Amino acid sequence: MDEYTFARFYPMKIFSWNVRGGGGRKGFLAQTRYFISKYNLDIMALMETRVNSSRAHKIIAKLNFQNAFEIPPDGFSGGMWLVWKNSANFELKVVVSHNRFIHCQIRDNIKENSWLATFVYGFPHHHLQSQLWEDIASLNRGNDLPWMIIGNLNELSTSEDKLAKKKGNSTRFNKFNNFLHTNNLMDISHIGLPYTWWNSRLEDQAIVERLDRALANPVWLSIYKEAYVENLPIIGSDHGPMLLFLSNQVLTKRFSPL
Image 1 (cartoon, one colour):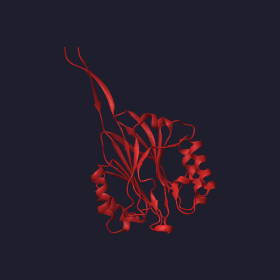
Image 2: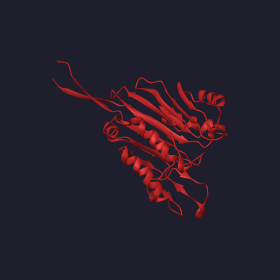
Image 3: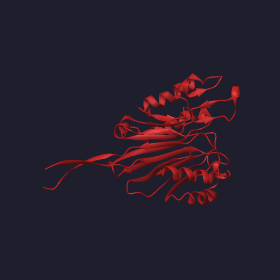
Image 4: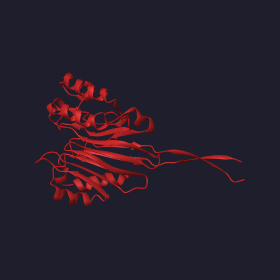
């Protein structure tokens, strides 16, 4: 009797983008729908949407996802949308919301496991970040559940995360790195552009930084060993989108009939 091995493969794709008020920008809808169609996205998180709930609902409906969760902006700043498709391959449930993050539980029906996902829009004002990191850390404190964090974190980890005449503040690095170390979080490997934000200036006045990233703990990384992020070009916003690919390959054994 011959033995055969089959693989079920479904690459889950998660998209994260600070659209910098894109909800009210001409061409935003067409550009966003282009990303959705090109990459066949499963989950999309948009930050700094800057539009009220009434208008947000109308725009979200045109993105053709079956599920949505919105954090309204604070005046003319902030705002987050999380949208996801109905799929036999995964289930998403929002567990906790905050004005700067949406925390979810995701059931992977192919790998038959569950994990935590936190979609984050960090404060642009750095004196507010320490409390945000504490609030996020509390989401998985006392557990060792698989955990992934993705979004515009608005933080640097090393001086290499910034290209400019003036480098970043090492005290700022230390606070963020302490958060990473305390919560056992590591960068998910990435390809594409090395920086995700540009100040839209040229030559000597240009500043580029890696403010957007995806992080995970070792438990999550052991499940999705081949996961990686692609940093896409910075177009239509001062931030470039991130696209996280999750390999959901599962090997199963079958035997030929006698």
